[in-house]
Length: 485
Length: 133
Image (tube, rainbow over all chains, first blue to last red):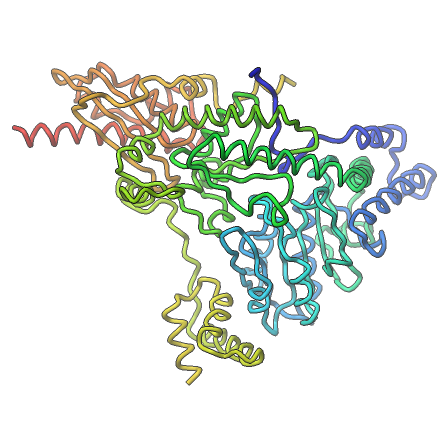
């Protein structure tokens, strides 16, 4: 098969749509005024912005286009949603935030920042396919919880989250729900009113809009305080002259995304299934991370782990053959840490190392997918020949995680034996004080009693989520026993 | 702007050693074998040696790791072939980095792994020698 160029990294970014680009061009040199100006140049641009706002509001069924705040990107939108909401509400609502353990770094790190400024955070764990369970969110909520942040779709492993069910819980408790829709927008229908979220953010360059523009939807029920100070653009919630051409392009991309949603999703889902079937037929010892293609998985990504070889090598050899993919392997990250998402689904270290993320787009073809399957199979063969682990597996020194033979020790054990210490030793979160632990357990007991199930097991489950790994289980059990009497 | 295909993550020398690794495989009936792992990133490197008259006659590698780890082990085995054991004991990762024309700062540890694998293989050889002496 001839060498092709196949871009399979659409969850990172996409090319700008022709329609969007054409709509943007006049706003560089003809309609170049600032929308804040009162003269005709300003008014001309205002009209364009107003149209883009309508297009984007329609995409997510916002009550009003005034509920949208334009920012510099998805990251700024997430920062504003979390820090802006926390600032505006901490005095009246409390200083506790609930997030899932697998949110995007822009969410994780915004929340982490708040913990240095008087906030407490509870991370809700996920199951082995990355699903957040609504009852775990309920268990993590305390009387001090001001905000729950749960993404619609995971950016790494493609898991679709039960946001609507979680919204029922937050509504019942009178807590705001923020949904990061970064990996979802443009690839599945989003209706903020049907979902019941108060804050939602996304980034148009993930669905063929331009970079440099992000959107934050904020229902009138959720107040956010500005974090970029200056003029009174965006209703005073985000200062700075608007990135007009990008907003215009985002509006068109949103309109086209809605118009072509059914067609694009059907096409991409067909390719996803073909890629999945092809890879699993032709390559042994690979594992899918996240749900199988279907209702629980976003239509455009596959996240897989190839056993006995590392991810960056796969990425580079694919790139050399014209195929662009991503990886969550530690060798790819600048911090030498595997993706926190893979850690949260408790993926074996050896498999996390072999991680590859392929994300499809509307312009990929069946021929592209067949080329990727054929090329990937060759690349895996080449790298396994180079890997000491493959031979050691064949000789029975180490065993496979994916398809165990019962011979040999685990790869992780082997790696620890020869390096002298465990690879990627988990960083331990700083433990909670005895007082704080007791306080958490008391909360867990009273909540468990309120639901009518205050068995030690039910209390332990709630308390574990609240403790978020900062207290070991034996200690928790002991405190629960003591307090339950 | 150059064409997309003209861009590579590493320099030409590193890419060459990654795409066309030298000395990949296992020395048959090796005199010394060293297998080391990097706790930081999880990479694993194995170097096997054939030693005759106090000199490294052949060196081969196998690596579980990223592009720069594979290139580092390829380059290290190239560099040490023909050296005496004494010279090989003074081998430093810096030589690998220099011969590769530099590595990104976050990837320097890959060259350290190559140095460690080589030294582990020499230790294995010397342990076998003293056991049979």
